[in-house]
Length: 165
Image 1 (cartoon, helix red, strand yellow):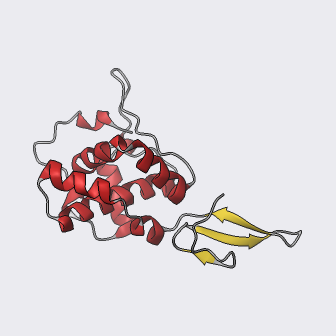
Image 2 (image 1 turned 120 degrees about the horizontal axis):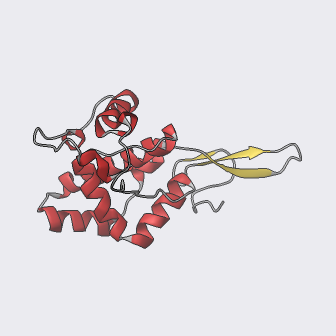
């Protein structure tokens, strides 16, 4: 795994979410680990600017939206489960996906792998463990305080959870 320029190779690095470990042969190797602090610190201004333009948001609101998408993706990786995002986070994630190179770079740097968006196909059965409400419960348990982006609107269609897993 390639590390960032801030790594000295001796310990933990918040920028590349890696840690150095020494094997039995005495050689230090980079091991990928999940680091929420590094994930949330990741910046991708072209995406934030697109959120400002598309949703007419303030920069603060757009950065909060991006932070919530990063939290959601972190949650998917750390739980090892397929999770359905709340509607607003899903819409924001769709915009991030349009920036294919930036999204790929983010996934590789922060998680060591690409996080796929998999729409639920017609005819697939809903598993209640993959509903946005279950995702919100997992997020609340992991992060405690959540922004309004994690809410499900009252008019949220009952089968809308079928859009993502």
